[in-house]
Amino acid sequence: MEFLKKNILFLAPMAGYTDSACRRIFRESGADAVVSEFVYCRAIISDAARIFEKLSFSEADRPFGVQIFGSDTAEMALSAKIVEDRISPDFIDVNFGCPAPNAVGAGAGSALLKNVPQMARIIEAMSSAVARTPITAKMRTGWSLREIVVPQAAVDIQNAGAQMITLHGRTKSQGYSGDADWELIECTAESLSVPLIGNGSVEKLSAGRLRSSACTGFMIGRAALGNPWIFSRVKSEIAGEKYIPPSASERAKLALKYAELMCDGRDSGVSAGNIMHIRSRVIRFLREASGFKRARVEILKIKTLDELKDILCEFF
Image 1 (cartoon, rainbow, N blue to C red):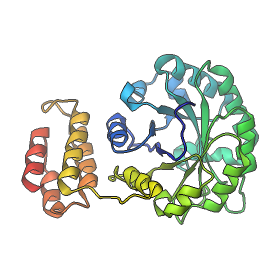
Image 2: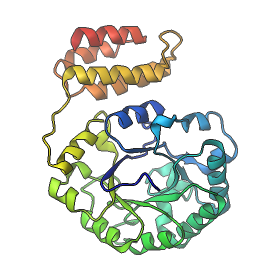
Image 3: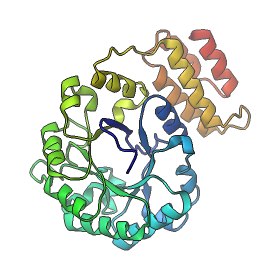
Image 4: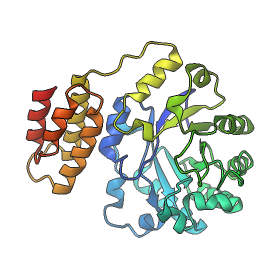
């Protein structure tokens, strides 16, 4: 994984958020690497409608990873081979951490934290199925505070072939509540020979903690929603430099670029669903800007890209 470097910053995969337009915006705003929304292994195998549209990316998006979830060893291996053959991402990541009911109900995501040997079997099978693409994994610290599985589980999947591990410092039961356990993340990083990427409450870490971490890099998820500039902020903190927040006009410019990417340069023929999606994202980008409250009322009414341009020009 030649793209890895000390203090590399990843945008976390987030279902419903990290579409191709979002990934492009975050790459341009300071994220060093991005990952797709997670996709079900069976959807890849069956070539479900639009599944590879969700995974589309350009060379400008690299380093780019595809995240897959599932629980069946053979299906996970086959899906990895299909992804490698069709789109050649820089890495294929296995989701061992999602606490969402649809993933857990399928015996996948964080459900596999109760079956570490199966996690290792999945990694081994996928590593054997691909010819050139590194297999990585994203996991949580355990099922609950009474059922912590790291660092040993991370060591086990490393030994099975995982070439990088991302550790979210909460358990499945915690969901996204409370702060991530960075002591446990650091302990796990020190137990591995492969790179470990720390995830969870990164935005709350001190500059000193970031600089001294045993982690190779960091992954930022929910804290980046509507705030792609967080990557620049974290980089400034690591470098000991002053961070200058974006101005209202800079926020508006980025919001418009996202909308243009979503519309693919079209103003007419944009679906109602797409417009609703654009409204919500644009509002997130602008929420810290002066003049936001007045602009928000008008943004919620837009039906075309030109209308959005006019509003942004008027208010920002």
